[in-house]
Length: 275
Length: 292
Picture 1: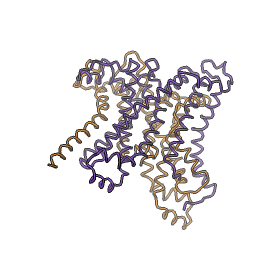
Picture 2: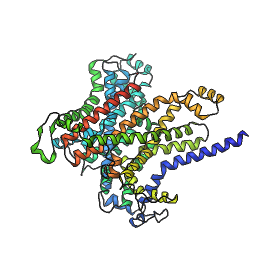
Picture 3: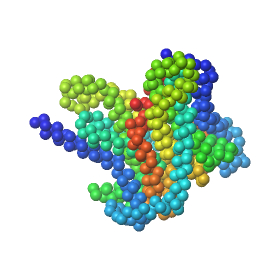
Picture 4: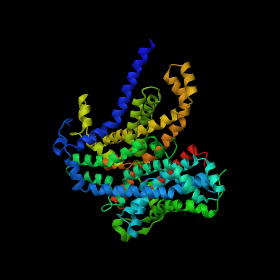
């Protein structure tokens, strides 16, 4: 009696899991297939599911419509801001994990609060400042502004990671006369590499996805890929295939990174409210 | 326990990060406060002048601002309960033992929507929701529903934003709740399963208490992110038609970037920030009580 019942519920469960998967993945399927359609096929009504695929859209957006340079801008900005955030954030995380000092909780609060500040608050003042300093439409302006969200993430995740390293290791090194900096560089940082890797991936994803700063601060030369994709919608004749080819090019790298860091993505998005 | 170090060592470790965040996070903020006290329009630079709290007075009495706030709150009130109920179902299914491979795959697919570039979600929505060429209207046709003009009609455009917010963030809520479920001690769960066969009783009396922290986290993070919501509605509808999908961040962008009224946009964003900080305080009080 029990066995068939259980089997039926397993089938139901499998069906539910399949539905969950389809719900999540179908838009990506539609994005990729549309990117392989010519404009004529894309504008068939009702939409077609079987057609002869073409890579023409990719060719066009990459080399004619300047999505190629925009992707390069995105890579430059995301890689540099991530490197900078790791460089500045890991020593700070080490200090938060290991040192005792006054005002620590206030400092902590301030780092975490950045998760809540909307970029629209900072975008206009930074727009004016960067114009004064001649930084408008440069990679540097974006790299610096992206620190507002990459640095707190690196600090959060790496502090956690440093705390998990046994203190006996640094105490032994201290007895041998090693300075704090040596302990950090030679002992703790190498052991904290998993946390550094995870926070780097998350920083990369969030910088890569950012639109508002990019849209306002970098209208031409430093334009990133998401800002580029938005401009396609401004034309009269909406080129579906090209928009979806651009979207695919933007989304594929982050999806790969997201799968690599899948266990930690939620942690990054919640700033550690969930382990 | 923790090491006490000299001020110099401390400054060497913390200084660069603190300085960097102060320069990119606090300096622009102070500049925004300063600008919010001015009439400052990029197209009428000559008329720039100090106006004191005038901008704040006009924002606080501006129906457009409060309508955008209300719309943002309304989006939250509709989308988040859907995300929590669907997310809870997904989390409960994934939490049950068995079908390990299927569950791993489902979990991996859940990661994808929340990592997707938010601007791309708006573009995808445009393509899939198109009245004539969109696949969603085709599917609705299979069950006998006439094509719906999603993007062009104010109510439908709002529904479309809700739909895509649900698509992108339900997996996030599900994974947070799943993490919450894994904090229920297995022996308590097993003991309860011997007592009752009802999943509802199990959820209500055994699992729910352990889910409260996750639920509060969901509520407050979704509040902050809904206040920030810009990319998806902007790429999908530009806030339209009319102002049907003009959420608070989209409104501020319009005032600053398309009406060039930076003084006013600054005042609006400072008021929004005050609301956000209030919520952040709440959040920290709930979750970072054992401050390090």
